[in-house]
Image 1 (cartoon, rainbow, N blue to C red):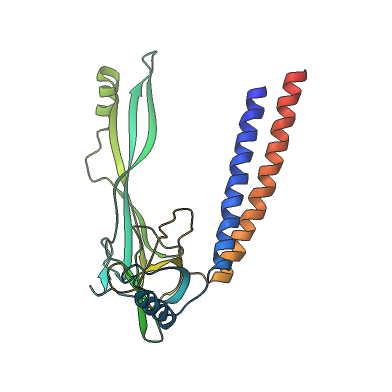
Image 2 (tube, one colour):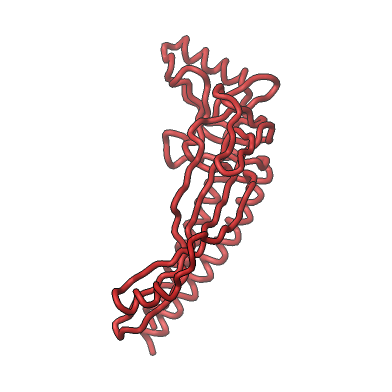
Length: 259
């Protein structure tokens, strides 16, 4: 009985920690300055004049419309959609036949990811005709558009009985049911909010994940106000649920030890 109580306490603590992270995200967004490209260029020039050329660093917020990198407009892998960023995932759904210790055949449906890829090139944000690069570091921006989510059945001839017989005779067997294809894109012109660290390590100004991994990195099609409202809602829900679970878990542990 007390073991259940301890598990409930641990789950509650997990929700409380998640609430703390959500609160940190809110504080980071509220504390960061929203800077334009000219303002960042002025700060970079000051840094250069102080002898720190190539070492400029500034955690801030940048807003603008998604814009292609110098490599130009991209096309997504699955649908060929014009975009500045894309990502796709292919998952195989299959039946798995195996035998338990008693020799009985069991059939379960499973899913495995067989391919997953994100566009390598970064993109840019443009505002008032000026651009700043965005290094997405392989991450998916929040709120990107899902352009396909389709399932295709396997074209292989059905040989279910062969798999069953194989499981009975020789152990585990798999039978492919089909493949799930999912793809997301960020189209040119999409309004974006990015919270990160601006640097000039490679020359042009680029906003990227902060060197301090404790600092949040946010790329979203939502506004700062929408993001902070959503984070506050998550923080309140998770903190209340976490606190309730911790109390319930402690009560269960005490009762188990007393009774």
